[in-house]
Image 1 (tube, chains in turn purple, cyan):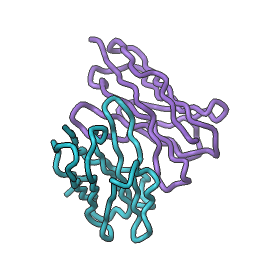
Image 2 (spheres, rainbow over the protein chains, first blue to last red):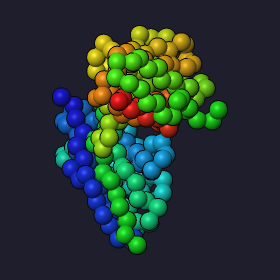
Image 3 (tube, each protein chain N blue to C red):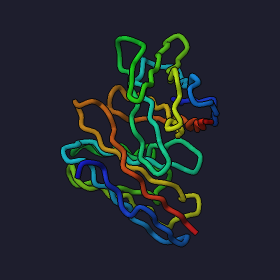
Image 4 (tube, helix red, strand yellow):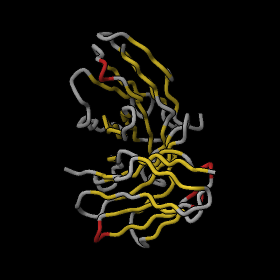
Amino acid sequence: AQSVTQPDIHITVSEGASLELRCNYSYGATPYLFWYVQSPGQGLQLLLKYFSGDTLVQGIKGFEAEFKRSQSSFNLRKPSVHWSDAAEYFCAVDFSGGYNKLIFGAGTRLAVHP
Amino acid sequence: GAGVSQSPSNKVTEKGKDVELRCDPISGHTALYWYRQRLGQGLEFLIYFQGNSAPDKSGLPSDRFSAERTGESVSTLTIQRTQQEDSAVYLCASFRSGSSDEQFFGPGTRLTVL
């Protein structure tokens, strides 16, 4: 079955430190890949997406992600975390070939220490 | 409105009662999705509407769940004979094919079944 795994349920970093959130998906044809952020009391917001082309994609709020086909991974990174980045992050994968039927990972909750 | 809206924002009901949740998508968005997010978990796909095509109901967990959408407008998700395990946040998203391929999410309806 198609699945998306976010191995880290909870991560804590210090403000200014770098961040990497992991995402792996089950093998299949190259899917469409997304990262969403959900802040407390807010709806989900798209950070970035990968469909094709350059495997390093830039998103909003200084985030980037790299698609590695050989590892079936799409890890999210940020070089310097801000306190406002504390939120829950979801990796999502569209295996449906563009019909945007997304399968979400369980999420990683990010806490930021001052 | 500018975004996806959902009502009610909160719903508390007794086990066995029926509930109806409403989603107003962004005008012009042909696709509409319903997801369920249980506490501490990722989003589960429930159902997908695309224009006037037959909906993809593959994610509905039981026959107590149903959804309707007229054309490209409002959608309602109905849960009959609610059970405690139905307690979750129900999220709606809309999407305009051929656009940025981004799903825009509503704020959700938090359903609590006592």
